[in-house]
Image (cartoon, rainbow, N blue to C red):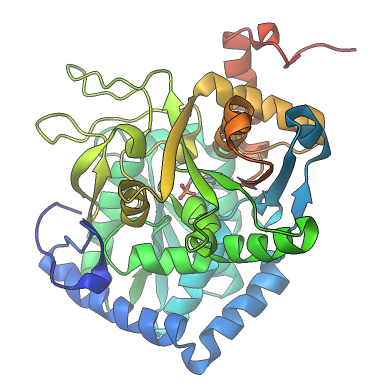
Length: 420
Ligand SMILES: *Cc1c(COP(=O)(O)O)cnc(C)c1O
């Protein structure tokens, strides 16, 4: 979506402090307003029992509630209580289905006949294709050519579920171009089509809509930790790319001001931006970004001094995004959420540690949260909830390659290729 076209900044429902809004081209405004109306009626007011059906389907098709599990070895290692919110056990292997199923169902209630979505690493495309198959909606997924080549298994998963994958060849052929292409499609098909955005980003009402569908993570975790540990946690830790699992995990805890909230970003290989090359060797938007408009909202961005969006980087494809959700940016600005970052190597170590110690192979994205707990456990209090946003089966190839490259057997607690 092109930037700066229009917004109504007087509409406080559409903003979080100075962030958010709807900077969209004229052609998309009717769709955005129609969606806002549907959000209010079906999601907020449960018209026609929408939320009841959503919860029911998430239980039967999605496998909710997901467990909150005490991690015994990690608890022992850090000498405090570590609990894992197991979104890796949700259908599809990540938290993404909470949002995808919610939006596809909403599209049905709105009388739409066709679903489109963008995907980078392929996780959101997969979740959307699954939801569309489940709800009998035709579905097309836009994906950059480069990403299609490096995320083959997810391309196959999308197609297996009956969705079409549209290759986007513009620019670097990655997520940013895929989003632009999906917006272009939507601008000409708004009557019949719903665009399922994959995170708490984009113009209002998407950041709130996606947050509300994902907030089940924190709602469940809050009840579960009180029941299992007898009290609220001292801190909640989640990884942040666009910020949907973070907002989902945090939302229920925001009013609990004694609970510290940590958003762990991808520190990549360095936190510096290379101005000359227009590259950021990280995706640490909350920690290092500056204000600007991307994909329909004012938020924190990785950009050059002249406002050009830089190419971000992370070992984990799902965190590799130059923007971040406006509500999360606001919660950081108001000191409710603490942004932190860990580098690629710390995330890889987190990946191996959870796999070896707990028998859970986490997504590389989630491994950032786990890496942060290793680094900072002494500051996290006695009772910590970590959101394991997804499982790591999709990342095995990357992990093997990157582990070898870094000679990680040399890392203190991680014996990677021993064969005892
Ligand atoms: C997509 C993804 C993320 C990053 O997206 P958010 O919107 O920041 O949650 C994190 N973890 C997993 C497993 C993912 O698939």
